Length: 307
Figure 1 (cartoon, rainbow, N blue to C red):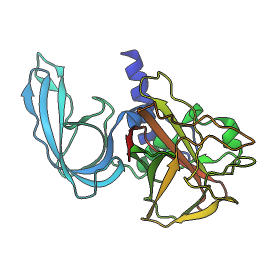
Figure 2: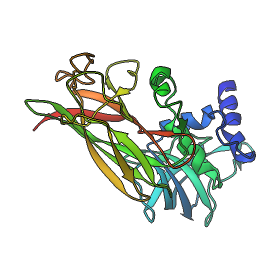
Figure 3: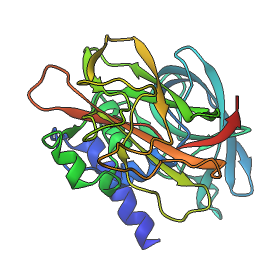
């Protein structure tokens, strides 16, 4: 109970104080955001809690206004099952309703058949002008998964508050020559971004690239660190500049079993024997501001399939 109360204070704090740009990550918000399959700002179309043993039950009807995580699209209408608890069962007092018809909330959801709240206490927040950026910041932060050594190669980029969606495919394609993974990068922000994505190469030092990936076997207890990953197909020379305009996307093909160069070997991210893995991809980019930024995908379960 004490730990829950501490997390609640940490999470609620950002909603009642003016957030400082570049401030430290809110751990309560990150925990709930990472645990959610979907995060959206939604308008309540209907909510009618009915009495139950635990207090009350409801399936609120919501209309998505904008998405912060997951595949929901603006205009989608969904039902979200949740319950209310007794404040005083003997007096018949319920906790305050989580939803009010006509109002907008940021909701943190888990989809398993239908939608439910990620957490009983922390998953419903009134819409706030700074909350979108705070959620994105929390989702992009990867902590020690990305080492200081690799961060320094990019002069210490900042965790981005822009929604740059990185979507690995669910299938790693295996041919006689290689393992490849398709990744879609979508710029949901209002700013053009630029990034340098290098192709694999066989000689000399590793090419410089803005793309990193982590691949961990599904049975492993600890995630492997993020390391440079390269576009499939050998191509010598400096990485080409890739521009992604607001609202646009690009799809890239990544070499998942690249062995490194003749001078500097690499441990392949995936081997053919690792049929099921959890993947995470990180990209460094420029927005025209002074500092570089980075965004990361959610953890994605993938499996190897033969082409």
